Length: 298
Image 1 (cartoon, one colour):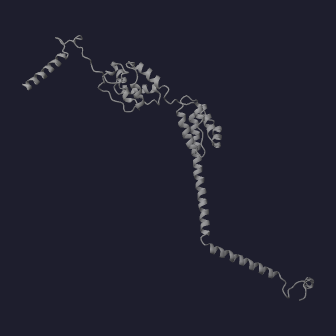
Image 2: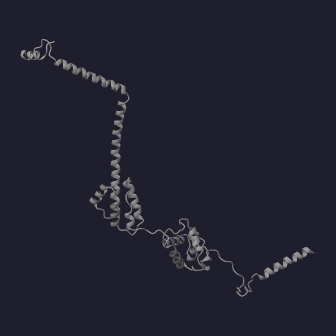
Image 3: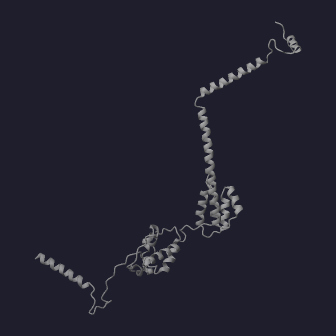
């Protein structure tokens, strides 16, 4: 009896649920008065309109793998243009789909910003550009100017090739600077007087000419340093070898020095004796008499 009551209760619940489910009237046409059920909320940030969140992905669409997630450090307008072009190349031909796919290519901070925007304020691509660029316009790193380039100076003990490489890299980050400003900043920043003399002699008129002259001068300077440093090193090594060979036997060196000194002393004595007057020498008579008179008799 209890089992039959349980089955009857389940059947009544099932019939009630089926009665509330929408069934089109005869002919299969939609009856808006009869269908009063609420549709589920589409996924995606609520800042997007419902049409954007319900946009369907095209069949040949390929997700982007070469677009860096936006974090607020680059120009937002340029990044949006690159993102849109990449989506179109991947098969997306609807801006609503491109906007719906945007959160997948935002970094954590940018994604959190998008999630906390008011509901349904972005309806098309123009709305997205206006809100996106307006928020990140002041966060990205802007390019410098000629005064930033003048701060690039050669450091103490920095070789010429390193300052050329560092200066050239900074020039690429300044798109609006003129060639004359670049040439003046480089001449003011280097400490190599010979290079400044070379630039004054050849007078570069563009940035490419400036870097060519500086690079060729640095190559020649490195070649000269390598050649002459090798010769100086060989001469120093030869001197050290000679000094080392002379200091191997200091006792022998001392004996040789003493022998030479004794020999020189003997020679001096012999010369002195040879200059003394000998008995029976053939001195002149007057000179011999003067010597004998000057010498006292013992």
